[in-house]
Image (tube, rainbow, N blue to C red; front, side, top):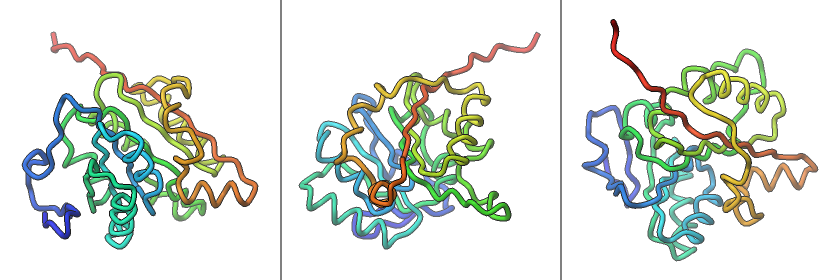
Length: 208
């Protein structure tokens, strides 16, 4: 890991996340995974100064733009993470450290030959459940109906989440919280539905 202008660059070098990024247990912690151009991150940071917001994206150029937007919003409660999403969720973040994870308008990779690039696949839900606190919320949105149908099926057949009403994400449902991609789709006349699930924590018993 390197530190570049307050952007934590996570590499494959082994390091304990708590040694480079403090996540206090008494704070509400949210992750904007694939934060893109940063509109959603900046809006959350400004609206909820008592929370810690983790903004993560693979593209360093985007992270610099996110950082600029957050600073323009006058917020200082964001941790900037330049990292690959699967690596962050599977290897870096501690168990049960997040109250909510937002994955908004990810690339749906619509062509059949590109489906393997999708973030939301069956093997992603165990790491997602691992990093969420018990009862933590997974918030997803996409303009692609087929991708939404797939994600709903994968989430609800994983046995790790239960669907909840959008009251669980009501505090981030206003127009000021729309990502730049969502604003673009809405301007084109598309709808961008949002859904939410609560993380379940299966109880494992010893073998007899």
